[in-house]
Amino acid sequence: MSTDERTAGLEVDDGIRALLLLMPRVVGRAKRLGVPDELRSFSLAPRHLSLLANLVFEGPMTVNALAARLEVAPTTVSLMVSELSRHGVLERNPDEADRRRTIVGIAAAHEKSVNDWLGGSARAWRKVLEPLTAEQRQTFVDTFRAYEQELTAEHD
Image (cartoon, rainbow, N blue to C red):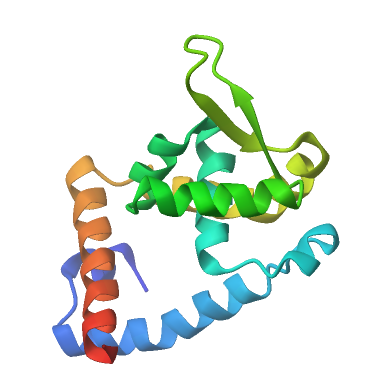
């Protein structure tokens, strides 16, 4: 496909056909990432992957910051952090700037394997999003979010 063909746009049905072909490939690729051996016994759910991926991308942060990134309540994140801390995947440390706050991070023993496992996703997103304008990135994210919401509404 030439650049002219890509910039000319797609009719709605052509876009749907392309995405119906592409989405199973993306989901299949994501499933093949394979949980690192040392984390397999922890029964990690998609919510755990989002939490870990945010820590890989952003680095250690507070429960409230994680909750904001994950768009869930702090109590939900606190429960996930407690669960992953019990397994030694995450560690909590006092915030040096404010001892009343706790910073959550990936435990040193698992940092390399989690980064190797989930870091590629952030690198791939960066590579495909960087060439876009801020408006194009916003449109893409808004469209992807709306798609997820429509799938949720359709199955509820």
